[in-house]
Image (cartoon, rainbow, N blue to C red; front, side):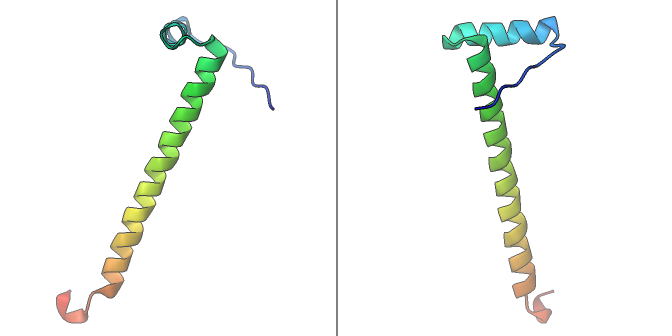
Amino acid sequence: MHTIHIRNISDELFEKLSESSKYSHRSIAREALVLLRDALDANANEMLKRRRIIHDMDSYRYNLKLDEI
């Protein structure tokens, strides 16, 4: 298991994290981990969707016949 330290967090961001942790009944550290994980998962899923769309578009383009262009 690894440890990460975050410095220079603005008061506004810390307050948001604190409120979120209270609402979720988690410690601030646990809430930060959950939010970070969820953000990274969402980003990975979005990138995967984009890759699939690009792949589908490329497949369609390469399968067109010359008279269809």
